[in-house]
Length: 238
Figure 1 (cartoon, rainbow, N blue to C red):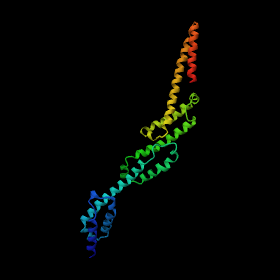
Figure 2 (tube, rainbow, N blue to C red):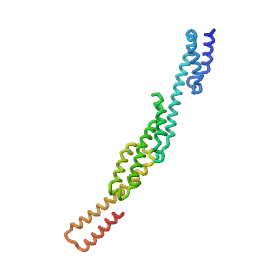
Figure 3 (cartoon, helix red, strand yellow):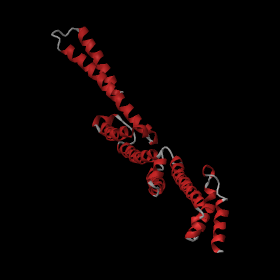
Figure 4 (cartoon, rainbow, N blue to C red):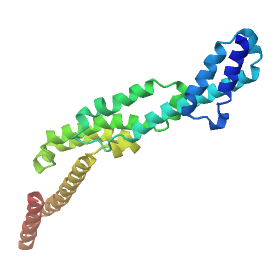
């Protein structure tokens, strides 16, 4: 009879399904064929296939988990392949070429699958770093690429560094994505050196002021003042 043939077909297909803990993505067709064959059976036939039904459902669940893990792993792999660090050479198209495609791929995952993508924060870090790379490039170019005595004296160098600092510091562990961070740190170092030179000059000028406040101007005093003035000029010249 038809029922007998349908039952035999389902049993034959179910017999090909591996144990749940051994199911792989390669078993997808076998499992789906068994499920389809069961669905085509009459209610009378299905009543005789209760064990087979349980096997099919367990296999479908296992297959769903595997497919979920596979989809999540695909996103994980793409994140791991992101070019790092982000440089002034690749920054302009980085988001469109690297970030956006992965975000769309991630968006298509179920909530359970998204939970499996443990490195998604790396994608967020990369996206945040894009703005900082561009900011460093813009601000450095704005002062001619380096800190000089002129742009330091004008305050332009300090303003450039201050504009970068808050954004760069906010990246925290993501700072490794910033490929031009050496440009920023060199600006910070140069400003610190100028600050020290100014402090040294202030000390010298304080000495001169103290001498000028003395009541008597002996030859020794004049010689000392000249020496201090020369020292101050040397600091300024540097």
